Image 1: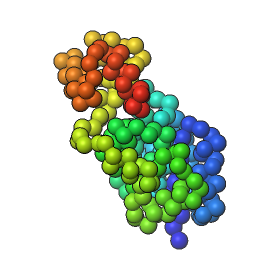
Image 2: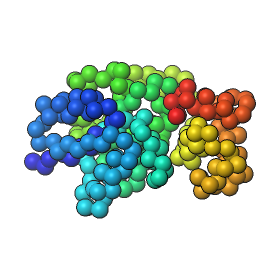
Image 3: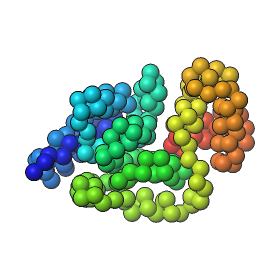
Length: 219
């Protein structure tokens, strides 16, 4: 019987150990690898790609220390990279975010095979999510399903460029300096900012946009 390769990416060592313990209780044949930041996660994916193997399942936190050098700013970016490099890999998103805007964006951009809120996770539910994935099924926790149904009506999704704009603005980079960090013209960046403000129905300058992004889990 083939062993399942599983990569756990989370910046909390105790949480990672908890996930590993649950997995190994379920199946001793799991081959488990770990990473604790975007940089480490990127390195694991790059090693897999260069050695010609892939992870069957990636358990992925969204809020991770960024890897600015490679423009990997969050777990979402790692998930998008995994989707690009390893189409057969199943993504299990485990997040503290509970904001509808953020959850909706994660769902639309990554389309994870399993999606759970950390506050709801029990060993049994985590085990169920992994088992469903190995069987080719989708598993979204009850809370995630309820939140996604409750208020979201727009198809607007922040892509990597939008999130990069927010990331650098939050670091104090001025809009006029953003083309040095993002492969887009100043006019294109201004348009992106304007669209984000219109969609989120907010008025004001960059600080207002950044504050909204922080409150809703985009930063």
